[in-house]
Amino acid sequence: MDFDPADPAFVADPYPAYAALRRDAPVWWYGPGGFWLVARHADVDALLRDPRLGRVFVPREPAEEFGPWNLVNEHAMLEREPPDHTRLRRLVAGAFTPRRAEELRGRVRALAADLLDPVVAAGGGDLVAAFAEPLPVAVIAELLGVPAADRHLLRPWSNAIVGLYELEPGPGVAGRAVAAARDFTAYLRALLAERRRRPGDDLLSALAVAAVDGDRLTEDELVATAVLLLNAGHEASVNVLAGGVLALLRHPGQLARLRADPGLAPRAVEELIRYDTPLSLFQRTAFADVAVGDQVVRAGDRVGLLLGSANRDPAAFDRPDDLDVGRTPNRHVGFGAGIHYCLGAPLARVELQEALALLLPLHLALAADPPMRPTFQFRGPATLPVTL
Ligand code: HEM
Image (cartoon, rainbow, N blue to C red):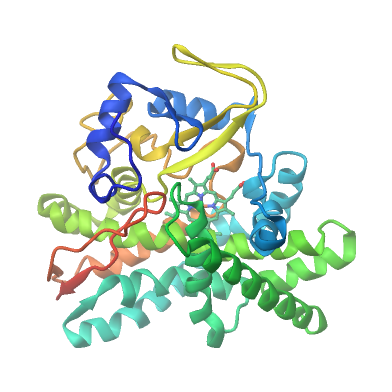
């Protein structure tokens, strides 16, 4: 099978390889990773919801070297199962409901407008650096209460930490990931101490107090939760924003349709996540033998669920390789499914809808064919040079 996350051609366009997997080897042993790759929508969706599988965090060795990186991952809800997962998720879930996301809509629009103004004044620029990156970072940083002057630190720390999520991290990635995890946790411990002394009206203050009050969260869990929210709060949104604009520019008919009917924006956002899914794969470990198609996944085996492939499965979507901004129904798995279903989905939707509402009226045009990021797990354009 043609699945090679280290091959730039595969990373640039994985969809033909996904189609072959779905057709010929929907549950395929991926030797280099040591897990089963699962390519069909029905299987991916079912396994995400199946309590016979779950996240099992395996610390990286040697422990002395990987300590800071292991710490931020091991204690994050994304890597836990009940009862820890339930406890950690419940603590912050209230801040990410659809109602809370709606309350932030006006603020998101203002932040987006501020970022777009200079691009408009300059007649164009790189939409990744000028807009798609800083917008989600600003939104999540403001929500947690990271001071504006420190926000430039977040994206480099996050990028370095998640570099180790790649199936085949390149040279130097591990060292940068560990250093970033160490610096990020030191920064957050100091900020949390400060918020405990002088609480503000932000999520970090609420978390810091919750930890002190009720013995509900250890200090390590608190730091890991903050890192997860700050990182997950922008990594995927950046790529959907940039990749979504790119997909629309490459489909002028769909762009015109959306311009003519802005009421389609909520459906368009779901379609952009489906069409070029920003997070390619998530793993689970089987706690019991589980039949997947013709294959039995044994207890202890790991599976890699290919969200990007599931979202192009013709068994689940009509004309899956077409971009259709009015697509309905759209049961994509871009936000996952089951107990780890994306906590930030309501916020991500508001961000993407507001960003599109500002971008659509502009006469955007591609100034050059943008390169994709060289990473498999995190998928999106590296730059997006536009004129307007
Ligand atoms: C379009 C943007 C986004 C996409 C496509 C996305 C996608 C995902 C996916 C696929 C998962 C599940 C991972 C798994 O099953 O193992 C997930 C989990 C998560 N996401 Fe998002 N995400 C986005 C934006 C956000 C935002 C804005 C936040 C804000 C805090 C966020 C926070 C989280 C958290 C905390 C989890 C872990 C949930 C858990 O383990 O219970 N995400 N996301």
